[in-house]
Image (cartoon, rainbow, N blue to C red; front, side, top):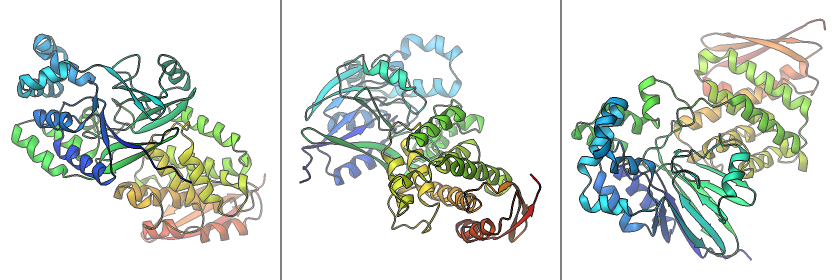
Length: 457
């Protein structure tokens, strides 16, 4: 019999002065019957609702720690002269604004908060921290190595380590310790502006964690920013789900403004696929063809390195469900991806990769399917296009013989013509690719034609 959770704990972090997002998250968590709220810090920053956010978090939360941004605001009076010269102008304004508005009562509240707090949930010891057990501003997320997570797990006796700071939803199990990063309530990143939090469901001797994205009135935030006379870039951050550096530079790096090493990540995904006994020849050929298609259609989809990374991961993993037989193997692949927390993916990325892999065969994306309707409109579009490319690549290796060595795409107003080079007779590959082109044809509103030329080996 399934146990009834004895506690449901909403994990919040990085509100950053965003009252509309905080209100929406609390309302959503209440609907999901949250019994407690724990806050991992960074009450302040960029958002104009300074005291309102502190007041609300103190009203609802039963456990809180301070964040690195909060500490900087508390130090502003002493550091003002130095920071005026050394800090980026917009960041200096954000610190100054929060300091000037912060009431003496709320300043005292923040000053008394610890950097770490231990709690018990069921049989589990839980450590709350903003960055890591080692440092209040250490970034823990998909880029963090297993070695580093192991080192951090050895610093405590906790069964769970809750951490924020990176604004990136993330979970991992290392040395028996579960790391959980709920993402950011108030200033989410990854090009998804919806507020993010996590729900910890604890039984006496087991637990699960669920991540949620919540839409809120972003334009209310933008109006408040403008009314306060704060920089327009602040409003752009909340509207686009980017950090300040990304907004100012016109770039969208996936993880805290640092360009991820996608090659290393892909190799880690490949090692997981090997552990799942994937059919290397077929999966690697499909991955190669999917990458070529992505490159040839760059002017059509306009995507960059992150989307190519997601497609590559899904291609490598699309058939790992075969371990349990052909029936429903696309759905089994999806489930294995969703439950494998050691993959170097954020929660958002894991969901996208799982769906892309799932849609490499059978039904096209529908709102009745799990996960898909919870995505943002942009992420749904990403799944459709990347899954469309994967379907075609899979069809082009129908016989698992790596017949197609290369291809080019001629882009017309109403058609795409895929001209393939083959080392043998590839009629079945052309037939299969055309059959599986249905999703990409639908999303691009173009007819796709396949041709091949047999070349000498």
